[in-house]
Length: 229
View (cartoon, one colour):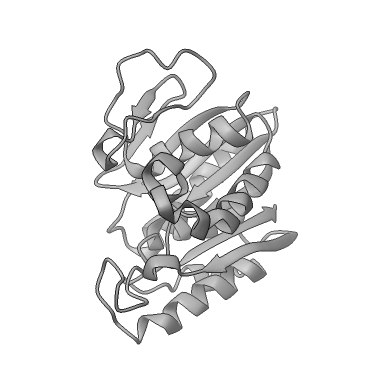
């Protein structure tokens, strides 16, 4: 059964070995991410996006070596000495968060292709909810996804001033548990498909929604929150 949902960004800068001097700038973000994840039970299903649909874990090991540091992460307790697999970023971040917030947890990562139509993402979220509800044990869902990456002149996606409105709509939808709004996100929202899956999973809406962080360090929209389904 679905017992809790945590929403965190897909941000490599959370990892101190990658952040370097920027670690202090994202300390509040990192604290919020761990606070959201620690509320999940020990069995996780992770929702994120990638180049194609996939299911990973919970026995896999990944590394942030492609981002500049060989920081090993796991999706379940165990030895980090195994040969790392090619994890998408959402799985790497999920493993990193798990290791710090709930090292006893076991996570399965559901990767969804990032160019799906909204109706498809919604239907897949509903299907995932049905699967989770068949499980007698408490299951927590970790959504790993970003907003727009175009919010300041130094943003990695370039600066598009109009995308600030889309980011605000996303932040407000996540803060208020507005699943209908999550089905209408525009393409500048990088995690649009993951949030669409969340909408299907949590429909018609959570019992409660709590905002822990919103901001755009480095020009990328990050939101952290906790929902009770």
